Length: 360
Ligand SMILES: *Cc1c(COP(=O)(O)O)cnc(C)c1O
Image (cartoon, rainbow, N blue to C red; front, side, top):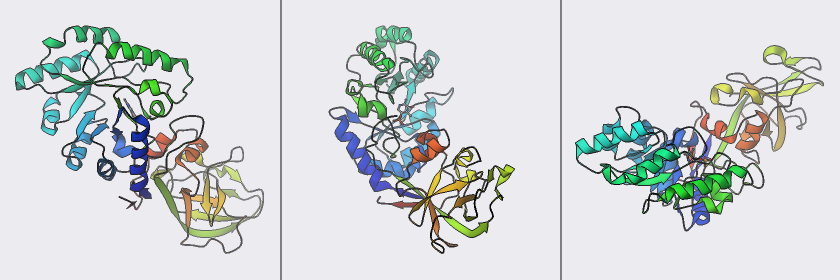
């Protein structure tokens, strides 16, 4: 697995350029979308990023060791009893329910310091986030709190489809709610909204997937550079006959004499089991000796078979590599073959890869 930190930094700078005059933060939750939280954050900080979002306090702890002075927001908010941990790390919870706000307020009152935190207002996701009526009430009683909001945010449900009617409604609702918190920076846009919905940019944008080279918008070109490359080791090249079957459940029957390259990786490394092939369904492709070659049969835990019959004899041998990501195959191609999204491919990248970080 090769992670191009130069491409990550270039993607960040491109998003900074597109977001301006809004400020650009970086979402590095789920181990930096699978590429490694620490190297990702270090490269982003070097590229000028000073505000990061993670999902969990444990992630904030790892992040703080890399970016001692940055602003860190924890999207999943204040889990019960963890306020002291936030204070110790100078990390800010994104408070998304009244019980969280009450707990943080009590902690701030007893600590006798005005610990900042963010407010998340729900405008359509119906997951973490304050009901708009609670946000209105909070805005009226802001002076009664023992802390100050540093950010007011919401999250879009359908930004990957810029024409979806829900986008305009969420932007309008959020604009009205954010205005109830004068002087507090506002943030709504994820990668897709940053790229395609200028009205959603407000003061700070929160891209994740676009930083890592994944597709943020369902349609159109992806302007971001790929960050992750996967080169899998070929451990054997073998011949099989027409009518033979390949892999578990004998799901793929060969329709011709076939040369198979067996590679040492599988779903235990996060390669989706659903990206295999069967008699009914084509699977993902890999690049072997410069050519696109299809996966044959089920993806096993540690092994994958690839059809290299169309390569010249001897073009691939034991010890060569098959490229599953890279050489024109991106995370979204692999995702599509498995009926999922690039986000899931990235965040499931396995722990067994030898990871090369380049360009950092
Ligand atoms: C994950 C997340 C983001 C980043 O979304 P992308 O689609 O990866 O750009 C932004 N905001 C919130 C609240 C998130 O959970």
